[in-house]
Amino acid sequence: MTDSEERLLIERAKHDASAFGILYERHVDRIYNYVFYRVGDEQEAQDLTARVFYRALAHMDDYRDRGAPFAAWLYRIAHNLVANFHRDRSRRRDVRLDEAVALVEKSDGPGRLAEKNEEKNFLLNAIQQLPGERQELLILKFIEELSNAEIGRILGRSEGAVKSLYHRTLIALRDELEGRIE
Amino acid sequence: MSIDLTTEILSAHADQLNRGETLPTPVYADMLSEPRGELDALMRTARRTKRALAPVTIAPAFRARLRDGLTMAAQHKESQRVLMGRHDPAWGWVIGAAAIGSAAGLIAIAWRARHTPRAATAVIAPELPTPPAGIES
Image (cartoon, rainbow over all chains, first blue to last red; front, side, top):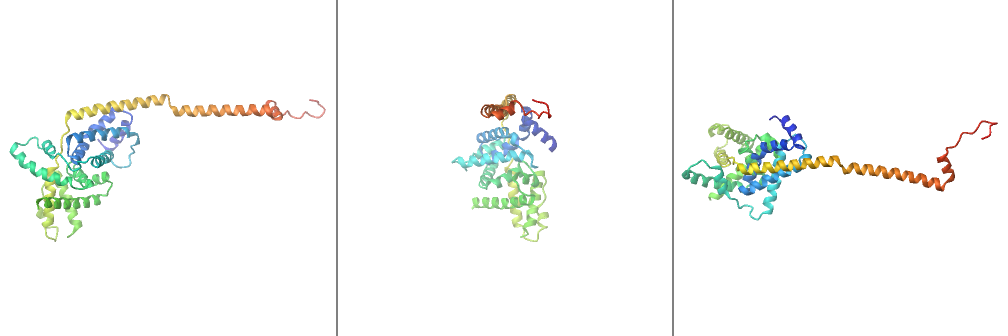
């Protein structure tokens, strides 16, 4: 779907349930992945994903095309809900990484799974310690596989700023991993 | 360390990871005059991160249930919009205000007519033109 086709779809979705359904199908996977890796729990991720789309539906009339992709608007909603989640919940860093690993490694055998689980748990825990924006960057870069320009439009930063943020994020993550080893 | 060049190399490396390509670190390191230890460590961190952050699949039942809920909510929202369009309270206020204004104007005219005879005459019978000389009214 081209950008202009999506713009037409968005306008239709303001008053057409089936058009909103198409938008939902286009974006639910990315929003779910974003939320899941930010909160680390499948049930919470489902709840927050649902809230993202219900909020989007409620505010569709307010949506204006300002040059950023529709996904950026959904990510902003998701970002705010995740921020509220972490603020409101006492178990901010209590993530169920076993669920995260189980969802990702469904096809592996038990032996390899145990070894991979430890590595993934270790790294995902370290990622969870990063500031929210840096977690967002890694999710958009390595799960959504977006370009720096696309990430910049979502985060409200220039392409150069995204590159610099990525560099600093890797340094922080490397330091976090080395700190855990020591 | 050449921060800008390292930043560019790491950025390009991330894009290559996403494309499933692997470019040996020495190729990147040769572009730098500084020691490659830092670059190696950061690129290794990036590879590990890419492996750890694999896409997760939404439970199909949840996906379908959410879609059904959103469809119902969207249809309800649209039906409310249609109902509001047929009996729009905003238009009711406009029409009501116009009616009140018209009534107030008529009441004012009638009051002036009762309390001001000349005014009443002027209202009821606008001033007649002066008859020509020689003709009595």
